[in-house]
Image 1 (cartoon, rainbow, N blue to C red):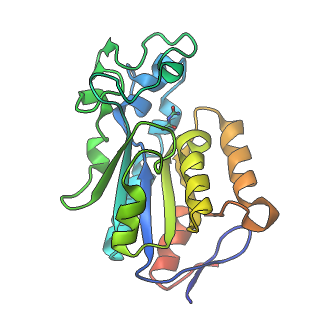
Image 2: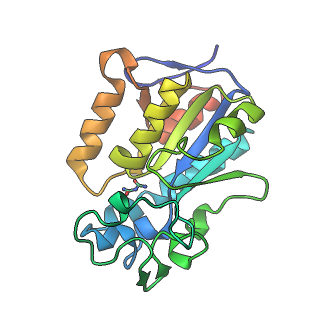
Length: 225
Ligand code: C5J
């Protein structure tokens, strides 16, 4: 099998069985006025990865891989948003409240949309998820089975919340998971660093990590040591 240089050891992959999954690259997490900022975060950190995510998406599309997009969002009546999620903490705007980009994390609102630079192409799978993990209460397992996917490359935000949760869910379901180190970001640099370490610790207990350029070179069959 071809390999991508990665940590803690090379990621062997089966061409045709690998997809890219881009987690929650939504305006609500990356732009001022959205959910991320309402929680007190500086969103400029996560916005900075957009060009790298764009390059990864383009490279995976060029390699013929399926690209799957996820969005954290809720129904307008919030029937899929547990009070335990909505009422937690003291955000300046809660899920469902009206903000400058529409209702926070509600499906169909402008702020909930995927960033236009990273927009899904017609035919690409888009998973709307009410939780942090993309497998919970979504058709993701069925879509991956339909596409014949057994290995996943991960990108998106935030590293230690929705990205890590989904990687752990995928790992438990038997998928090999490779996280693009520079195509994921957290509002907290220390949390990102810790997440990358814990994913690849103990012999890739959750998965592998590698830089975007290394992944793209590896997918094209070149590798770049
Ligand atoms: C958060 C996410 N951080 N997409 N969501 O609440 O990581």
